[in-house]
Amino acid sequence: MKLGTIMLLCLFAWPLQAQTIQITGGDSSILQAVGGTAHLYFQNSETSVSGGILAGHVYGSINEGFRVHDWSIKAGSMFVPFSFATDYGSAHIQLATEGIEAIHATQNSSLTLFGGTSAQHYQLPFFTGSKPSTPTFLLSYRRKLSKRWATETHVEASDRQTAIQSISFLPLTHLDLSAAAGIGSNALFCAGRISYDDANHWKAQLNWTHHSPDFRRITLPYQTVTENSGLNAGGAFRSKRYSISVDRENVLSQESVATPLLQSTVTSAATGVKLGIASANVSMYFGNTNHESSRGQSASGTLDFGRVSSTTMWYHTAASSQAVEVLTEKISRRISLSQFIQAHDINVGGSYTSNLVTGSVGYVESFYPVLGLFEKTLSAQVNFQLPNAMKIVAGTLSTPDGHVKWTAYASKFTEGPMQGGTGRVHFAKYFYAGRFVDEKNQPVLGALQIGKEIVFADNDGRFVLPTNHKKAQSIVVVPDQFIAPGNWTVVSAPVQIDADAEATIVVRRK
Image (cartoon, rainbow, N blue to C red; front, side):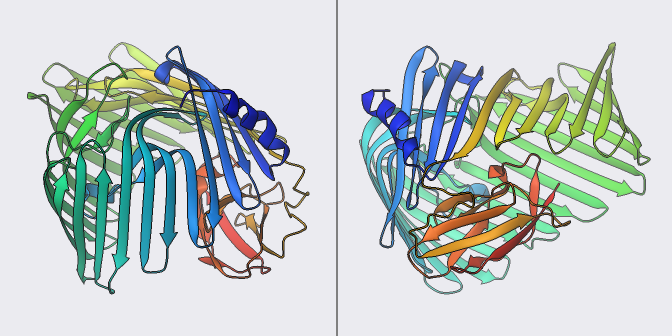
């Protein structure tokens, strides 16, 4: 969607009425992008306006979300869910689109309708650019028939037609069997999946999918994603002392917007053991990209004495072998330093964590099937949490060809005229309210989803969402949306929240 007059009006006029406003802007060498986004949270709706320059061209996107009775409506540029029960890893695949989406969900079923066009999305943390493509209609219907049986129906009408029916069966508590068949892009589609996960020690999954080469649901520049085609399989066992895993996965990768898609198959096996202060790991990788084979092996051993640890790593491919020594010292609970010694090179890394700043820098050695090599790449992340709910984030990303890209952006929350100090809109009948705290009962700038709404806590950890309906709503804590710096995990939280009854959510910084 090209940036135009209507978008500029929305960007500058809508914030005047917004209840809560999030402004984000930044720059990145990924896609050579610079731009910004205004996310506006109203009483009964959300609006997102994004615009900027990508590879020398101006792009923008608008997204409006609201509810009509029991329907959740979105209009503009968006990702529409289009994942199947048979997908490997239970991947939540979404299609880039522009148009109108309507979702109706009950306890046992959900219906998604979409009308508009497919699109090419260019998405970064601070900016989303969209380019419409082909007129498209989508329908997804999921229904739980019983405790053990469920069905899914997926229909896409575009320049190519897709209609796929799937069924899932749970014969045992941890065992899931799924099958799907139909037409995918005017050709035969069939798939099956067996999945077992006891959530403690054992995990295994087997997926086989057959479809036309023209049937493809997702492509992301600079990213590597699982392709549900052919055979994908994996399994793992983990305990306190031992671990073993095997995996065979078909993946798609794209080095840049201008380069073609690369299809790879990566087979890996790894095992590890931990005995007291000593631990060891061994891994093997076999890659095949566009009919060119590659392989690599790695091994590591660590001695951990608490404040000081030493790790020796060895990497081998057909083209090279190398050894790396890593020394890590924990200066304090906030600061740690690392030295990477490799041949004639010595590199230094470290991390620092506080309430205002969280950052780390170092080197990561990864196997790249496209190159058939282990590559050492820079990994850096820094997060500044400033006063007045302002956050600055910068970091690096390794692309499938082993190159390093960077991204930096700033984000700030502010209150609109409709919102008071506690976030209450005074003409609402009821309120969903509560507080985020850590295990020491200190306030946390957290975030959660109440029904379809994202709600953010204030400096006292309190959140309030107005409503005109006195009914319980489901809630989901979303740690990746926290304004508070660092990585967070949930200690305790209710699954539902009642109007005019305060909820307490306890979280912990990892």
